[in-house]
Length: 147
Image 1 (cartoon, rainbow, N blue to C red):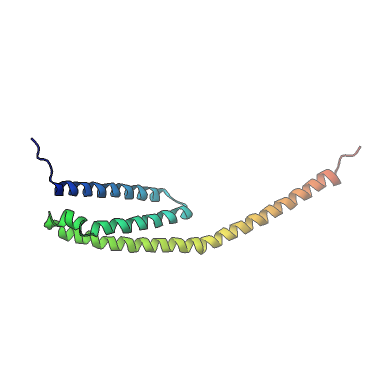
Image 2: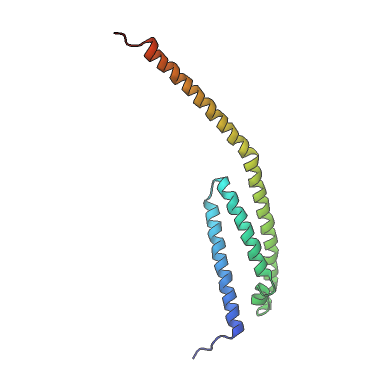
């Protein structure tokens, strides 16, 4: 007959399951970001990911997180765990830089290009309207069909 897990083992299993579920959600966010090409859509996704990762990494690094789940029962993994915790800082810093660059583009070059596109669209609409009015006036007034 199989031994029933102790309370500690069950708690560790539940915590492990929770981390795996969080990793699945993060993977979904990353998959969505990989497919996103519109910067205005991408920035909020990046910002949401940043918030999620900050909370996620804090839980992993908490004393009852990976140190309790991995380092205590398997101390031979402590070095790798330290490396992963250092990567957390690098990932968050890199993500902060990506978000800052994206916001700069949205508020700087992209905003300028957007204003220029709006201006040229307005100019072209006005131009086309004048041409249509001129053509209509010529066809229906100057060349009008007489009796």
